[in-house]
Length: 415
View 1 (cartoon, one colour):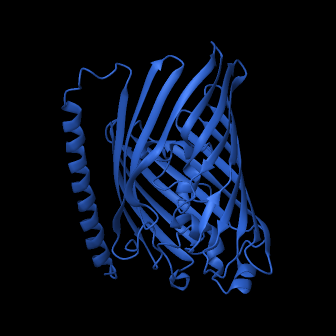
View 2 (cartoon, rainbow, N blue to C red):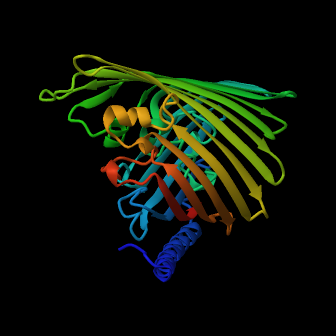
View 3 (cartoon, rainbow, N blue to C red):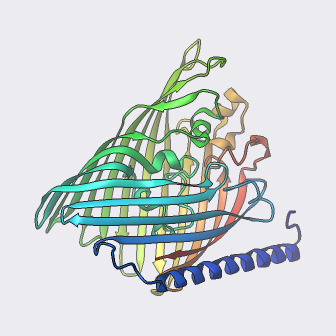
């Protein structure tokens, strides 16, 4: 039921926070017990095994559901992440890495266990200042500052990454792909330069990709062509200044079912991301700006010819109050079509709600590193627009409100 009065809200929050504390305590005891277990002596000395477990509580308002259909009711515990990874280096220039993950986050992520990444890394050139190599397997896509590390809560700046750049509603498509990457690194007195380029096959199966690209679940299926992706990073003064440019070109074909009225078609998606960061002793400032080009062709008679650019950016500041406490503030903006920022043209053409085409999010949060292994977080979002909400968790657009709030708490362990 909804928390309607102020007393009722306090009771709801108290009850849910108590639940989170209990869950966190149980996880803490499990991790502490696991750390005391003897390590088998027959494991290779260079084999490393790590993992993480996180549990979150989310409360949204005005029927706008985040990671499940109960977040806008009395709050939801249906956002949890579990991961186990291993790496081994049999030779100085050869490494094997893999991670299994289970993520529960609404209808698009039901909690099934899957391979998050698994690859071979071979450095065929390694010197004092330079390195070149190749990676083969399933690898994280090098997009922006956070995509490659977004799985682990400790490496994210907030519970939810800025959704204008790192969409959770298309997370499987964006996070990893199968294929090969060439990479290189060079360190010098004027800064460190690293580059990475890949030809991979993206992961497009699943309802979340169909809904994000086609508006609803379809009886046919999507099939990807080769995705070309790359990133260039430059760091100055041991990471005090960081700059990056990421880009990709994704081509997806749609093959309709035999009884379907929609015809075959193709989608080309080209994201370009510009990233910058400044790090001082107590302050960090980060900003990323993205342009996203969409091209839709065919899909029936008369053929569809849709071509538009999306635009998004965020500005984020972090202040390290003490080594254990950290505060963050962010302004995050998303426009699905930069030529129709308020969504009115799209609404007139489709009959949809204009707020589905934009989102402006003000976020404030706190992080408490209780121990090096245990972290607590809390954050508040004030959002105008619903462009990054999942249609799977919000199937009826008319039930959504353009102005809404989101409050979340997270407890996370790593070992």
